[in-house]
Length: 172
Image: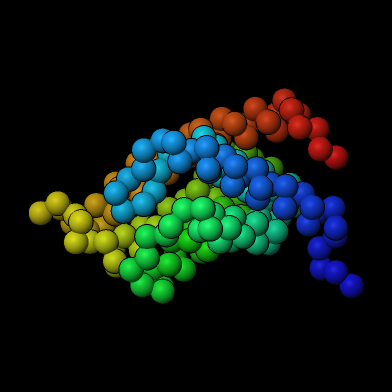
């Protein structure tokens, strides 16, 4: 007996695929020196899937998304633990949106804040050497990761609100 139905698996595969395409298109935009960039809504399909199917499916889709994107974008890795934090755990955290599926803003915040926390910890532990002299490492990591993820939060919230409140997809 399968834990997840075939339609849910198919929907998850489609959402991960859409996220990957959006991420690839977003590669045309500039990225930050130690990783991280603003995308053209690449997190929206994962957040939407988590909202529709729950946080467990959302976490799995986010982790899968992070692993598949590594085939197209060389990762910035300094340690195995840093890799886990910045890739599968950070993107898996997008699935936390599924816990708050009744409120698009809170759901999007939960998913992106979960991702922020993983990147923040990684930044404090492994990327403190990039902080400008006199800047506390925690402040540097918070500003570095908060800048692009703040923009992602705003754009993802707007896109998800439009998609869900206007029934644009009307997926039953």
